[in-house]
Length: 247
Image (cartoon, rainbow, N blue to C red; front, side):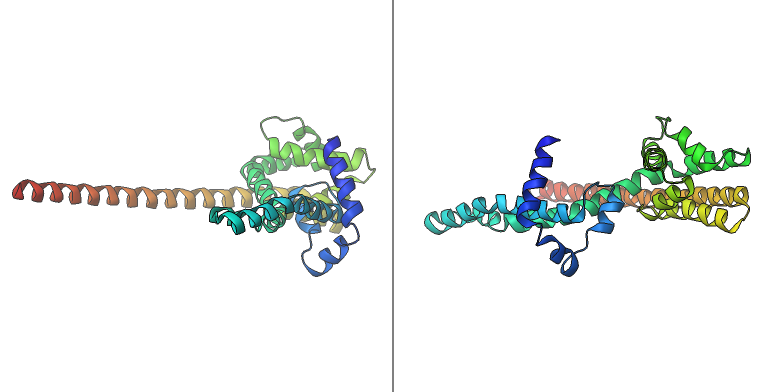
């Protein structure tokens, strides 16, 4: 996107010197950006945050002037707009990382099973990822697989290192354990097939437990809703009965 690239360039020229100090003393964006899958340098991201906050300063100044002269108090929410922008920039990577983990978590049992079954037939996980990169039914897994393939085929990283990198920078625990454990098993010369099968079973069990917990919470909410509706019906019945008696 040319406009975004221009904004990044302008922001880095203006605030590039301030960004390292912010990253060092206030908030470290690097890990959050990597886990969110946002392809931007932390210094550039911080510079862009300051630049967008600067662009909103006239709105805050105008709001202060209008409040002072016209006493229009609802505009008080626009006064800290630059601060809201900075908070938004801080929260975006966290939100993206959570969304990335949640979408992959739903697909992880099936992807892990596929990789373990292929491994039992002598096919390496990297080859399985290359095949998963073409599967449209698992979009989150497809995206992660393409990142691994890109590191190998474009940047020249060996498959094991690419898998380790994908595990290290991902926000989903079970994905990190699955790929990181596979890499460790290869390094120490362990039984890869047994490890993958065991981890796939663990992932399925963990997913089943979470689904069961969600169903229990939903059941509790439904029971609470039914109780509230019954109580409200009784209250209205008593209210109308009393009103009919005195009318």
